[in-house]
Amino acid sequence: MLYYNRFKHTFFLLISFFLQLSRIYCTYYQKLRFEKDKEFTILQFTDLHYGEDGWKDRNSKNLQDKLIGYTNPDLVVLTDEMVSGYGWNGVDNAFYLNCWKQSTQPMESRKIP
Image 1 (cartoon, rainbow, N blue to C red):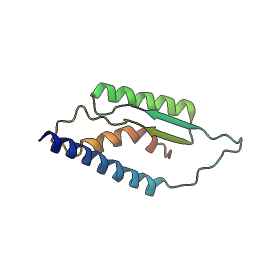
Image 2: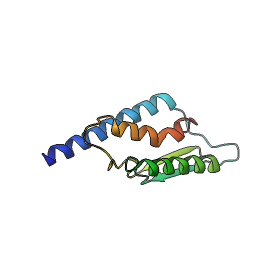
Image 3: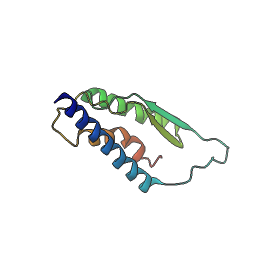
Image 4: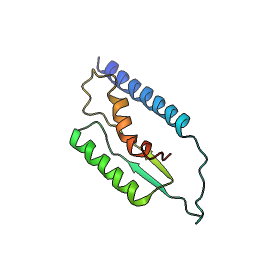
């Protein structure tokens, strides 16, 4: 049973990831260009672990908003465990997709690829 739950957990995570990735690609596909001053700013977020605790998720989102506002990046890269899911109850199939949407909302609202 444990193996099945891990498989189900991983399956929903992968499906959520690819659905969101395809949505972002279709919605925001654009050529990346250097600005007139020859600058191209990349901001990387890693290991924010959305889905562990509500207050941690809010703090992560606030941090993302502040850093994006401060750096004004041309591209944001998300790496490693953006959604860890320790708060998943094992029943809500939309949990990972909702966490992914929450973690990408600061970029989507600003149309940053």
